[in-house]
Length: 288
Image 1: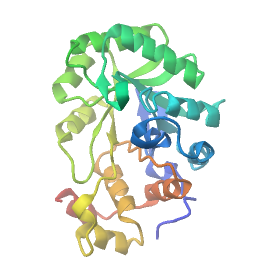
Image 2: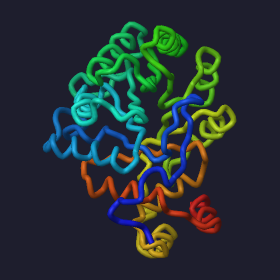
Image 3: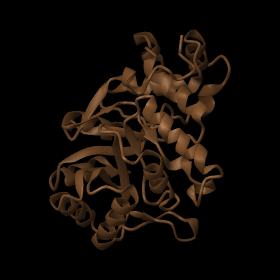
Image 4: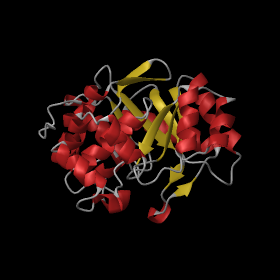
């Protein structure tokens, strides 16, 4: 039976060493939803947002993912307000490479922008070096290699400990690996949306962590009597918990980062780390 009060913690899912030396529990937290609507501005209840972050750390979550474009700047600031000085084992990963003019998502992978974005994240997070700094998206107006080289130079300068990528394909990952060690790739991936399977497999071969964003999209799978519903009933669990448990079982390098602005939903998500699906259940979900 799933512990619905969240007292089972993120460590139940095991750990992964990002970049070979940053050991994190495999169930993390995505801080995008801690901002206002459309990922813009302040949250309706800033203290609740800070409470979610503090409770995540209490439950054993030691990988928190954010970006300078969330708010913009709001998510990073809330993290530092809630958790600074940070627990020794906490990894705060952030991203640069998107701007938000008029609320739109506009890529900006120019090296000069990425340097400025990194400096801003350092200030808001109140750190001297960012544990994991990710290129948020390739910019079609900028050679991909130029953007990656900018992050490599930030790493050389000590501003960044490890470099990650987001929203990339296999070829882009291979290009980046020729420039700088890559600790993680963050792509959209869930039970119903798996076009990044080849990227995941490449990450497995290279020892790169895979961070699925939007991990809880289930859509039609939540219909009563469907396979996800039946497996959830068998475990006395929510369908979302089964979706997270499947991600964790699907690959040992998988690092889901479900996000929420609610403490109760956070506890439900974290409790999913303790779920153990049978081989038959995993195979059933693999075939969906």
